Length: 266
Ligand SMILES: Cc1cc2nc3c(=O)[nH]c(=O)nc-3n(C[C@H](O)[C@H](O)[C@H](O)COP(=O)(O)OP(=O)(O)OC[C@H]3O[C@@H](n4cnc5c(N)ncnc54)[C@H](O)[C@@H]3O)c2cc1C
Image (tube, rainbow, N blue to C red):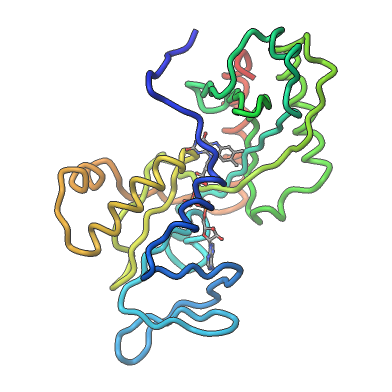
């Protein structure tokens, strides 16, 4: 059973980000492949964002850096870096589509944390998403063997749902890092004098990032709105993490416990 949300649609996040990048107004400049290596204040009270090939000086900084916000020294010991993974098939043929009896362009999101997301893209690829890993070193915590194991688990989840498509291979398996907090609380607001952030999406950052980013800009500009009041009411401070090795042990046990509870949805 599932709840159908009328008017919903499947959004391709890479297309959204590229589309936004390509349609920004003239007063916005995008700098790609240029990580900020240091954030510090100058004598005049401005922030200096130090890159490899230059610096930006500004009175105000808005961070949209998710889990990496902790690398700037903010929300330290409050964010947990977690990775989840997805695999997709090649586009299904007309005959294969007929066997699943489904239309293209839909998504099924699990109600419980550790379940499986199933999607069908507009070009008829089936996507399976599940599995969480605690990744203290971000992407470097994952190796090819882990990715292969994840792909096998995805294939088992795929077969459980579509045994008639056993011959259809996955063409790609990938993962991404995001931030969760122990109390599942999102951060929105001021971190320092002139530094603002929206961070800790708890795994649903597509909608959260879009809404909270817009409202953070409103807040910094001094705008006032009901939606701004609402987001300030529902956000807070992510709770503090225990020190290692208790943190890693606790997160791994919690992930296993959640997977066990959601086993019928894997
Ligand atoms: C397989 C998978 C499926 C998912 N499915 C869903 C879903 O169905 N719905 C949903 O809502 N969410 C989903 N998510 C989660 C979602 O992708 C994330 O929550 C979202 O991408 C977070 O966006 P963000 O812009 O806040 O952070 P990020 O995408 O992590 O962006 C942070 C940015 O900060 C930049 N940055 C970091 N450090 C620096 C630095 N020093 N200098 C300059 N730039 C820096 C990075 O380059 C990056 O561009 C999924 C994630 C994965 C991996």
